[in-house]
View (spheres, rainbow, N blue to C red):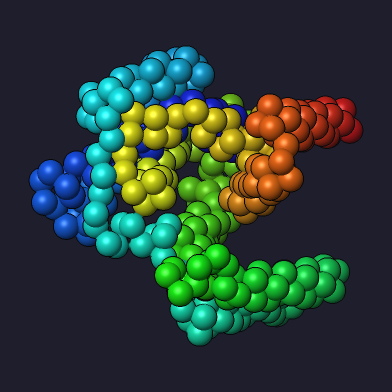
Length: 332
C-alpha cells in the first residue's frame, strides 16, 4: 500500500481473522487444508475490497478507514476465538510450513535452481537489450551483484544445512525451512506483477501522481481497490504462517507490534512513504534488518526496551533519508 501513498493499519488483524477462519474450517468443520486455505485467502480479498471501496469510492482517508477496520477486525477475532482462548491446529501440512525443513540435498537443489533461474533471467534481459541496440553500462555491476548474492546464498544455505538442534537425536534441525520457498514464490510473483504488467506500472503511476495517472486514462479507483484486495490477500497468507508458527490461533494473533514491524521493514528497505517508489524485495531486505536487530539484540541480552528504541531509530533515519531525497528531487 505504501507504493500508492496509502497505509493499511488493519493488515495485522486481517491476518489474524483469516488465520482464525483457516483454523476453524480445519478443526471444527473438517475442511481439508487445500480448501480451507484458499477460502481464507478469498475472505481476506473480500475484506480488502470493502476497505478499498471506502477509500477509493467514498474518498475516506485510508488512515481513518483502516484504523476503524483495525478495531473491527480485532473485535471479530475475539468473537471467532473467544477472549483469552486459543484454538490449536493439528493439520500436518499447515504446521510444516514454519516447523519443518527441506532435507539437506533438497536444500542445495533448491538453492541451485534459484540461483540458476536468477542467472538465466538476468542474462536474457541483457541479451534482449543488446539485440535492441541498447548500450548497457550496468552489465558489470549486475555481474558483481550476482556474484555477491550467490556468495551470500551459498553461505546461508550452508549455515541452514548445519545441525542447529541442541538435541539432534530427538529433533533434527537441518535444511532450509519450508517457509522460505513460500516467501520466494510470493516475492517472485509480486515482483513480476509490479515490473512486468500494466497493473504494476499503474500502481507506480498512481502512487507517483494520482491526478496525472487519471489524465493518462488509468482507472485510479480500481487500482486502489485492487491494491487493497491484494494487500489483505497477502495478509491471509501471513495469517496461515502465524498459525503454523504458533500451532494455534489466539485473540492476539496479528496484533502487538506486527503492523509496526511490517511498515518499518518496508521503509527501512527503501520503500517511500510518499508513494511511487519501492520494490517487494525492499520489504524483504528491511524485514531481514528488523529480524537481525530483534534476534541479535535478544541474543546479546539487551532488554526489550532497548531493542524497540534501536528499531525505532533505524526506522526514523530511513524515513528521514526518504523525505530529504524526495525534497531534493522535487527541487531539481
